[in-house]
Length: 491
Image 1: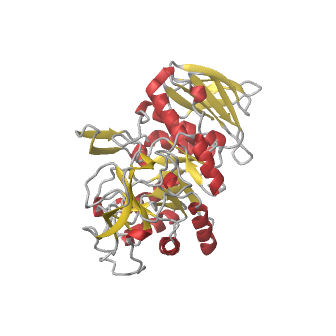
Image 2: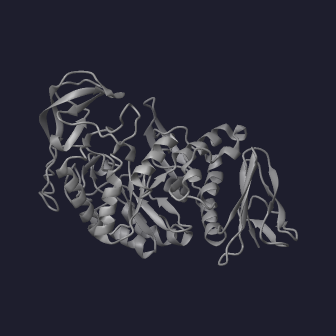
Image 3: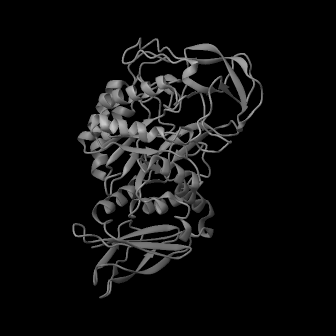
């Protein structure tokens, strides 16, 4: 589903400054990113969120407000105005990069009015266990979008367009999900907490015909307005799985375009991911959470981690054509909810494992590329200053090697727990190939066979200064330093 040897970049992080300049920054950086080897950018949710100019975008308020209307305390979003967003998309596409829009369609937040309705309270931790009788509640469920005044869509949302909410104005009971009268939790969702249909806010009822019609209408409008090349779907394990292929097939047919799609199904249960892939018939890719956790554990355990197992329980191993591989994202950076995070020393190894191998569609995280500094509260409530290291130099090195040398068949040398390597043989258009070696413990060496006999190889990371010359059969003894990676190319 992705271009061969393509590389995506997540062009934002959770703590991207709320100064409205991100779209302008992309306009300035698009050409340089494309030159470096980035072929697609994943942009954050562009619609107005509940927190207005401070909202990362996942607290969805108005799908049709891309930073155009004075709503939730601002006209612009956290990232800029509608016109700046559209200009950023055009700039990226002019630089020959695709643009993927981040879409959150699970819930809405920040309703304009409350409504009374009847609902049954359920245990937040077990959605199969009611904890009360049908009762009258008052919920924030009526969305009127007064700043937009019906432009683009006259549809107004009411409680019956949702199946559940977690706040009752009449009762401050905590840890409760209120299932509205006549509604049920969707079945084709993750089974965590018994049924993980409900996540937050007002949960969309995907079985309601008016909701279905509005989402299809909005999809057409969004595609025609922005011209994006595909979508990244947030929190897909909370949405009825069958919705995604139906919606994407409709938009692909309507636009006559091969639109890209990738979902975030955060689970370390391969059975759940397999089931989603089965239901969606492989019509969209998935991010690879199993690989992320392997990277994180490897970084924490150091020399005690068995690198031979780095691809165990991963999508990229089982479904290499459907896996989007990554090292970090907005939910995995320091002070965000996913733990453990990938420690800095291991990130060059992890990026080599996603950028220089044959399988998967790699995604580079902007905070790993440019670095990031921010303040945020930890779980203890205290505020911390965080500085994320920029790995731009080594990532650019890998991107260059990927474009020029990481082609053709792959031979793995995963024969030692503390030192693994592989060789890419190259192809007719890229005959050089490369060899990669990494260690999570002591300095190491390994004999690996290339397709280039009698050829001198150099380490483009600069960590090993001495070259390696292969013998008449293409074998060479390649080296790497302790806790490091070396990338060898023919000179």
